[in-house]
Length: 314
Ligand SMILES: [Zn+2]
Image 1: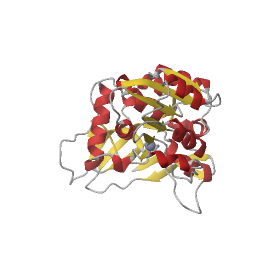
Image 2 (image 1 turned 90 degrees about the vertical axis):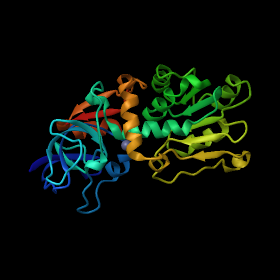
Image 3 (image 1 turned 30 degrees about the vertical axis):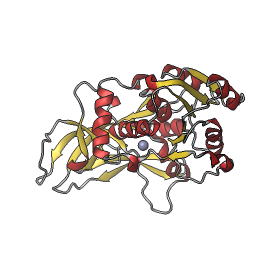
Image 4 (image 1 turned 90 degrees about the horizontal axis):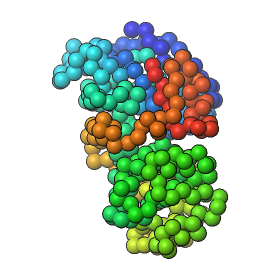
């Protein structure tokens, strides 16, 4: 069948192209309904393809089953809303293995049922895993950091959000931060004052740059404090403050392999979202149609003013 899909054709350039989809008998064909834009796609978008390399986009899809292959078994039916691990999501249609699918709960709006990112929210929430009453701090108040910590905020004594941008600090405040601190206004002294010298048992690092990690190292305190490495660090980051790690800091990497079971993480994410555990209405700031996918990635990858998280409706 003929489909339309997004493709990175040059550095920072996304175009729609026609392609052919040839489903095998063991897959389902899915009409993509929506797909989240993920910051982990930034490297491919930034540098563009090498030669004829295909760089598709979108791994946070939600869709509707339109066709079942002859060999597909299980509880699936045409017309069913599903989320899961398939791609590309920035396309009209895609194929998926039934083993990678989960049904979308009826009460969950399609725009919020972007299961892969909900699974990541669950995993990053596991990364916060702290004692009740601990002081927590988030360095870098983007979608994944602020929403993951909002799910565990009621068990924190203080939840301190640190960022350079006032609008990001306001977002963190809406998501449940008890204190906000400007990263350029002596955050170490401010966190020391807020925590009465204890510093933080868990600091989430969600800037993805060395300076953010350096700051996180300075904000931890107590016995075996943890840095929850929320950032997707697929590039080199220098940690110039390494000497401070003499205090027994634990670096926790809450990324896919940290989940006990990735499919279970997806189902958990969908059920948490369906019962309103996260304020996704607030956290998803932008929507675009597939026809505007180039504009969508330009805004998202440059973290334009007011941008938190974007969804493309296919
Ligand atoms: Zn992602």
